[in-house]
Length: 399
Image: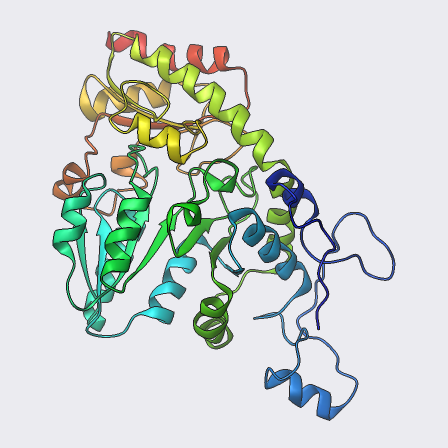
């Protein structure tokens, strides 16, 4: 039996973020060990047979069992309030393993049309295997309910979504899903468990791109799926064992250490993001600002209930001049990193229509509310006054 860390049952999330994982090895290390090994040695043939047959819990092969990866999985599951977690090679791999583990030809999925562009493409790609997906309004539960079919098996929500920071009503979607025997999966990438725990509102599964806030410094690609132990063990682990879309121990270790500062980082970044959003609202060249912490955000009250009263670290805004205006703002920056990644300590800026959502048609982008003039800024830990000045270089030319 693989041992557990002896923590109080009422340990809070910031304590779990630092302490949950596995007990130290006999060497007594204080920082979690990095187990860079492809396989594990067994004392005899009979023991090896039991372990490969899942009759005895042990580490077998790092494609599906590794101590460092397990530490990361246990920590994230504890922070999300779920029984278990399975780590994957990327956030998109977490969605892929969900499809491979839970769905088959003839099944149906309901998904927001406002999710990350690659998520939309992945669900569309599986139509050739007989898995249909209906895309609905991010914010209108009635559309989700009306899209349900007898063969609907999964509802997929991303809240807040990328890049508009629109907020789904998790409890309402959970009620819709469960009334028809379906599961609700929530992409919690933008908030992380530091701000939002979707299972508290009825979600069955929670996924992450650990590449973002869980790592927090833009160092590795990683993903994870959190959920009930019986579901993870019976559905997802067998798929992982066969498919091998697993997280490397080194990347798991980076994310594991990143989670130790997750709450501090994200709250500080969110404070800066809200200040930046309020400043952007006053700029003549800015037509609209999207941030859940703003009173002007359509789902502000819902976001404050679901997200611990914090709006998050992502701000999107539409500028005058459509694509030319947006590119001019991007190109005038000297501090912001021009990259589609987010969750970094460094502030990033991107033009969603030609990056994160570039593979969608213009009609799909507009249906999701993403015009050519939209920019997304993921606030880092720089002085917010410097970021204001950085954006003002381009905005002043558009006013």
